[in-house]
Image (cartoon, rainbow, N blue to C red; front, side, top):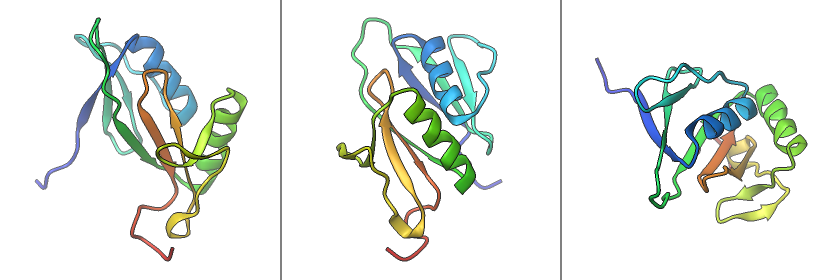
Length: 129
């Protein structure tokens, strides 16, 4: 079997709150806690396993989610309705804007733990710039 990403661990101050926050924005479900992890499973079967960071510092990570055009619109509406600032680029750059890289659309937003989240409708390198 070729290698596939199965899961990754996402450090959080409150694993339940952070998992719920992301799941609600992306239209996903929060799974049942197992061990120290609270999973959010994407449609392609990859788990983001939220774990409490304890008293340690959380190092910001980047998580990008490929979504369909209609899902992008729905997620962006939920981001805006929640009053979350989104950006056209990482860094952050272009507050309140989206990008049109590779003929698709994308935007970035910051989660409560400082992780950079991204939604995009076309993988990078898949089309004209």
